[in-house]
Image 1 (cartoon, rainbow, N blue to C red):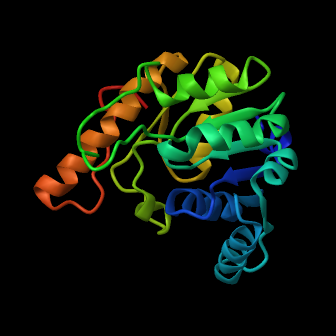
Image 2: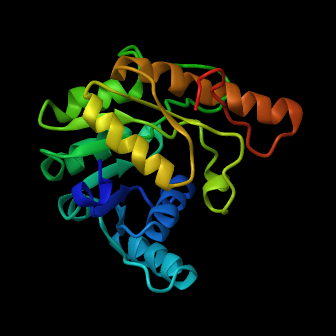
Length: 223
């Protein structure tokens, strides 16, 4: 599948943070038009300007979250779990008919190294229920360290991609590969619980062993 024929503009909701700006940086370098979204438009514009300074010649702009979602072909939500419900309600009018990549991890401070999944099962399931059947939710990138995305390194980190629509998962796998990572079909959206839970374990490993950014690697599958 030619991803760029399907997806030309990607919006990063909450894209001023480390994860969102890191993904924006990598996809801008891959040739996509990028829109940084924020609740505060000035903050989005400032973040976009900083990326443009680093990556002259790329197409990056900043807008308020709903406007960013409306003007893109594919939406990525990169916000803390505590902001998740309000942001989903805000962008809902702008995501119908689109793929939305949910990177959310249900971390509950201060014990972020302890797995604390929500009663619904996982953040991705909450996203799908909130946005409804008009939106195709795919879960990915929970186990990639945000600081790694700001570099040109990929590290020992694979991406698990879950979602109920196989064709949508395939598109997200292609985007992950263009961002420099190996990515894998990991089943339906309910399976996102495993990737979300792994983030707390990786945080624990980083603290316990002094690692900069522990990741996961899938082995035993022929190339």
